[in-house]
Image (cartoon, rainbow, N blue to C red; front, side, top):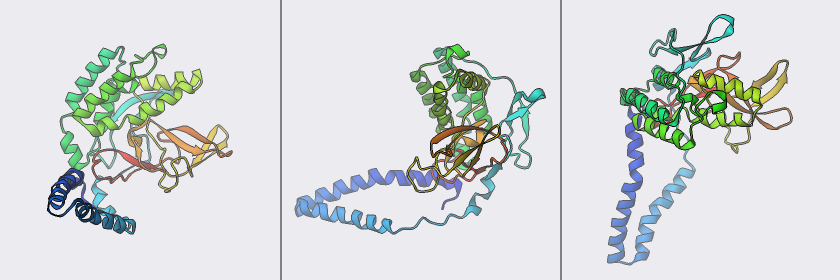
Length: 312
């Protein structure tokens, strides 16, 4: 409905209507109560709200013009932030932005491994100073923060919660919260992107020792988890239509997801699906897997550079 450059302003206006409306209601209601009685105050201030509620029950979702988003859309059908060297070993890399015709990839240094809670806070302060620069411009123009997200990986912030027995710092939950409080003060959109990484990495604590060792090593190397849980089916949250069927060597997954925060920059995407016995399961799908397509068509007002895409 609104061009990307206008959305922060419009979102601010919408958010201001609640406190402004409440203030007007207090003033008008107090005046009517004093001049007439309190019954009129409730009727005259409450009736418009009831009428608007009834009107919006029958309102249809507006048809959005996808052409307005054309300069901002990207489709990633190949690995987003990973390159592979000899013997299929991952070589970390970063996407250079604004090169839509080739999405140029350039190798960079190995990820730093954070060792203590104090170091985690220090690294967060350092990274916050960097991502603060250009935060407003990224939000207004919806510039996807490929380099900034990769910086979080390179400085070891995606490996914060890796247990000590697997080589990580195993920092406390309080420290994780403080790290992202610091990042959010610099750029809230970037601070939101790793939320699903820390949410779904906890699932691994219930896995086998082999699964833990495999993924925790990946996190220390800077690899990231995304998210593919929600589906735009207007059913209950757990009623997934995505289906996973066993095949030779693993599973074949069929479905479409919605509002998948962080999927564009993820190396692994946790996909929620139903198996052949109608059980809910989570599959960690590698970025670049055959048949996986991630479409950057997020147009949520107030969420400028937040990469919430649709894996198909």
